[in-house]
Length: 157
Image (spheres, helix red, strand yellow):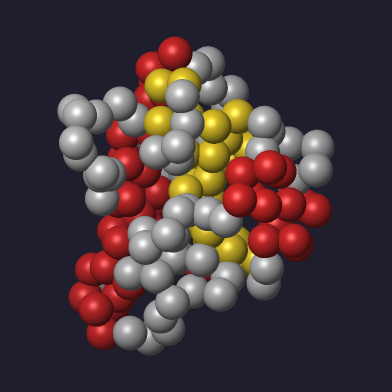
């Protein structure tokens, strides 16, 4: 089924991503599923990085990616929108949450998540339940899980 590109759908936001291959994989996922991607800078790599280019291939469409120069600018632009933070520190599972078609789903840095001040700016924090003693999933895998659930709930796929 092809997604209707005229409808606004969920957005994936990456907070200061630091692994080029993960960001490239997320770009491909968003491109294939029709989700907008938002990147909060600074990134821990250059978009010209060969590791990034190898994974992103020809899926990089800058019209589908919005860059924010800082988290301050990102949150100012979202003041009337719902932001959901995905974090291992949350107590609510994504399976117990009702996604909305215009949500922005925020993922932290692979190496450090998001700082405490960002946690304080969001009302909704969700986690992906995992087995005991497991620290976290790869961010690209996490984005795929959450984006698929959001699209399913909002009937975008």
